[in-house]
Image 1 (tube, one colour):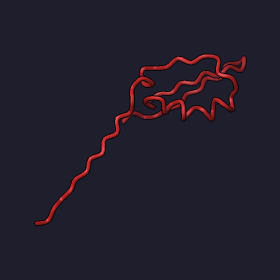
Image 2 (cartoon, helix red, strand yellow):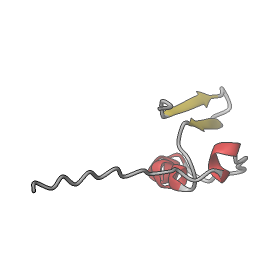
Image 3 (cartoon, helix red, strand yellow):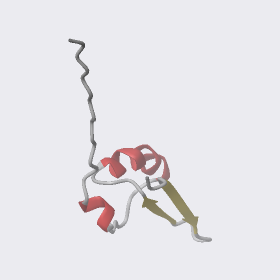
Image 4 (tube, helix red, strand yellow):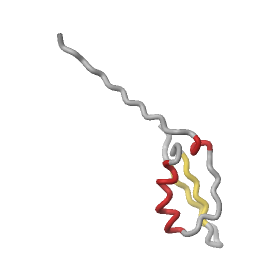
Length: 67
């Protein structure tokens, strides 16, 4: 399983660069929305390949029967 990370670079002029890794699909927008709202206006975004991949959730169920 990939580690989910948020990385921030704060430049001297006040700009903040944010990098999200390990979060698949559009859920990264949900994770970063509150932070971005506090930081201010988003000037640009570049979506990584992780954004375009959907997270696969696998449910394994086993049923045993006693005869």
